[in-house]
Image (cartoon, rainbow, N blue to C red; front, side, top):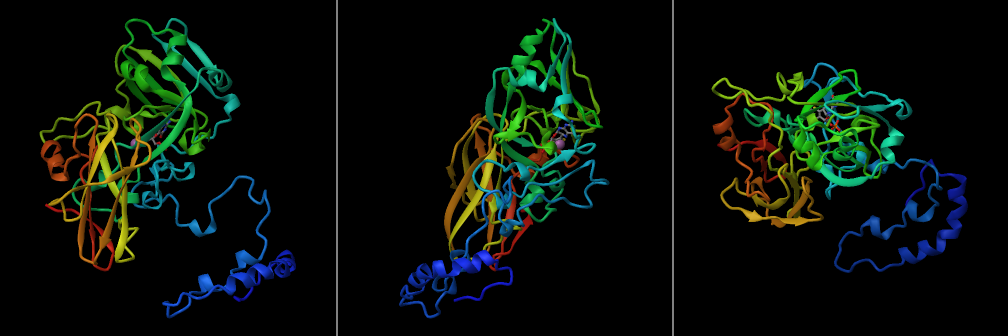
Length: 423
Ligand SMILES: Nc1nc2c(c(=O)[nH]1)N[C@H]1C(S)=C(S)[C@@H](COP(=O)(O)O)O[C@H]1N2
Ligand SMILES: [Mo]
């Protein structure tokens, strides 16, 4: 029997006798004949098997196990000057399946998290409309509702990697992405209610944060598949994600997904705001800039193994990662273990939705040899994720945004894994 800890409660002691029978049964299990050293995890009765656990309502809003405290968002302290205009990163190597838990969705704010009482929040629609409107949150919640699962990727995701391998961990190289189920109203529903004029071509979405962040959105995209969402993963949006209302612009760069959404102006041309002129444009080699780079191209990342999740065992292992495309669904993911010489098709498991992450696996045996692991996504338009060199050929080396090049992880024979690039 293992020793009892000093935190034992009276309750626990009282129930010790009650559970003695069960304990005796477990400890009388025959030890495995072939195992030289008995494993106390199986031969000893554990505390949690002997004492009563916490009752209901210990945590009215449930939290992860204390043994999961590594599973957190992280920032890179030198990346930005202040925490209000900054970013943190989703711990991709700790996740599985396709849904990002709400508390782990990376955050990107230009002026901090606005704290808004939903009772005081309004959404205004003005400009080239028949009838300017102001909605309360309750108004929006009485309109026909939809649920959609989509990824959001900041255009600057992997931006540090343009000139070579930089940050050691997929959380930092690829962690500006999350995948969430949104609940809300389609943008078309609210626009139809206001009635858009025939000459309307663009919308301007504006946030209620101190940045008043705003972006121009072409009307065709708005009417096609955009939403204004008040829910994420089955509950209200988190404050960090724009509570009480945010724009959902499926497949397009995260910057367009205006949080704390308070106004939509309808116009006939783009507004040329800061976020679509001096920012979120990329300088090409010839000195010109790319304009209105909205779509996030197909991309993938192996999350396990990766620098923060080294290989621990020889023999049976699971390689895992995910892929996404802003142009549709992911059709196939190929994985190479030798730096791109040979490729095998990974097994996609779980639901495959439009403009959503898909999860892939390769079940493999590892004999301890060094590996150069890569993954390559193909989407429903036939587009194939390029290598970083192929990207640089077209885009030069002055870019920050829209780096969807193939990532390489070097797995050493110790299992330790590093961010590298092969030429
Ligand atoms: N109002 C407002 N909306 C915003 C921002 C902001 O700072 N203010 N940041 C944008 C950027 S650059 C990105 S990448 C996404 C990040 O969304 P997230 O914080 O839910 O990850 O929100 C966008 N919407
Ligand atoms: Mo962003």
